[in-house]
Amino acid sequence: MTVAKRKTNKQNLAAAPKRRARPGRPSKSEQSSHSESSRDRLLAVAIEVFGKLGYEAVSTSQIAKQAGMAQSMVHYHFRTKERLWKAAIDHLMHDLGRKFPIVRDELKDLDPVSQLKVMTRRFIKISATESNLARIVIHEGTVPSSRLRWFVRAYLAPGYGDFDNAIKAGIKAGLIKDMPIYAISHSIISISTYAFCVAPLVKEVHGVDVTSRETINELADTILDIIFSGILK
Image (tube, rainbow, N blue to C red; front, top):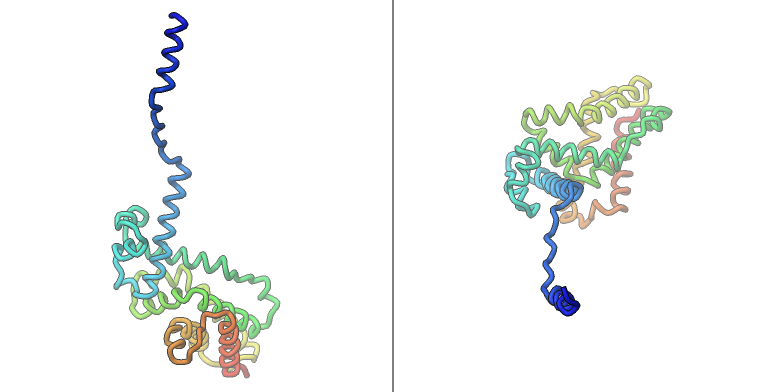
């Protein structure tokens, strides 16, 4: 090939339009990250919707729409509404456990009343931070169901058990009035959650935002004073 031809070929190659490289497929890690992101989004929306409306009033298409996804994504990640509900409860409880851990070593050296006060204040802060927990418990607790049995065995029974045990020990030690343990436990839990479940009502009636940090502490102090003034000897 002559020098002139070589130059001509080089010029033609330089002038030819360059082909755009085809975008490659997402890597497995990218696919996994996207999948987890869509799953977490569905769980976050499900917790909100189940908290506001309850299980029976919610459809998977409603949750998908609010999450900005196709309904098929719910079926892809969870298959059924009940599996989505259980996954949402798992997600909610694990998140709250991470944010508000119970350190039993810190409680073991406290007297039963002090233990009960620590647990009650912790429960008030949980209710203030995530009122959907109490709302879901209220929705599920009104009607017997397999979901309620699962919820109680998986998560609620241990928490109630901690309250019951502290109350029982306080009665035995002569520090707490000898009243039905279940009545004390449910009274504490009810009063610790109600105001946060009806935060819009409190705001409308009293003009108070119970979700502000200052009000949460103020409400916790008041609730503890009311409860323990009533049950202590």
